[in-house]
Image (cartoon, rainbow, N blue to C red; front, side, top):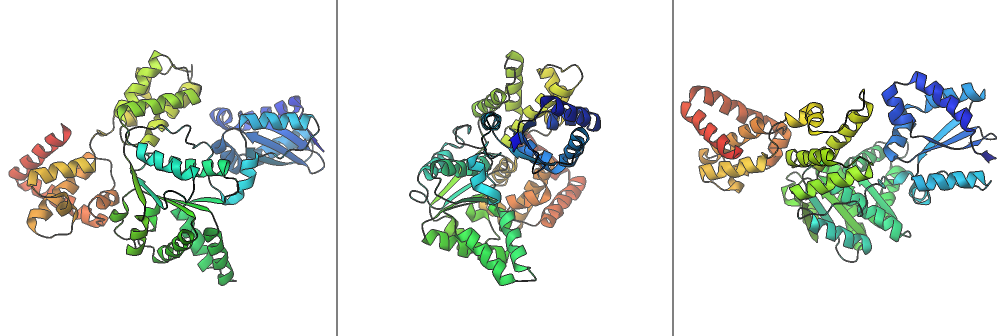
Length: 464
């Protein structure tokens, strides 16, 4: 029999947890928990949290402590279950339990998906800010969600890290689950796909059975969404299996959506057959958002987080939008950190421009985010009068190798990109090639005043 939880008993549990868990962690993770029901027959306590990320972290980090505190209060051992549910569903469940009716702890849409679905319900088309940087990718994604496999198949979305590709992928999946409940949707990262294939291939007991299960899982869906496809570069077995999975789904008119940090043609270590298939229909890019779009993203986020939107916060939003130009994830993270610091620092300081600059030192002391590898390459090409394709090629004539080495050196000096990331910007060069180029230019600058001046002039033009 499921019964509501005596609030005085739950207060005792919370009191014990507050003593055993650091104050900031307690406020962040434990306070948002809502007790739903207690089942004395099964010795189960059901909890819910309206933040999916927090629910997942509590499940992995704090369940044992909650169970221990509960046993101290109830003088019996109970198993604790916690699940993500919206505030609306939580209130409905509490009402159902209070009236004596049975109701599952998790909402229907989550129950339907089970462990095989990794969609984040927070990512929808409704909260996706559309601007000139992403309007085409958004329009195509929405069209696919409304009519899977009928309009654009496959869809390949590409763009830099943190620009909203994953948001679009989840939005497609969530829309289809809501409006086409009869369809089976599977979202995975390329890493998940690869790891499952490796586990199936290495099964010591019955490899054929595991492989068949793997194939049925991925080829038996109506919509397959694979994120960060660039990570299968160089993985021959994964590419081979994806090739056959792609063919099967396409032949049976099932929707395929893929994302990557680069255009398919730039995935240099990818099977040519896959490159070709990835470009069979729509290839849509997502660019860094303009200032107005960045401001809109932060304002929407502030509203969703119930932050006080006054002149001070609006000034901070404008400042962040001006400073962080190339990564939406970093943009949102900065505002989240400001809210967190404001809530948990002594005196709960107000979010102002001065507070933001004092708190986000990594943002305001970082290298100029207007400078990226693309800008550097374009300026270098102009300086040495060569084509961008020559700069990114493997041509060994000095008229190409010297500008290429200069560009690599400047990318390392003027951006926060790692050596492997820089290598990808130059036709997929190995990080050791980039390191050699940087070392060569560094050594030459020390002995050549002409080169040193040349580099200085290029830097000045890049910085303008």
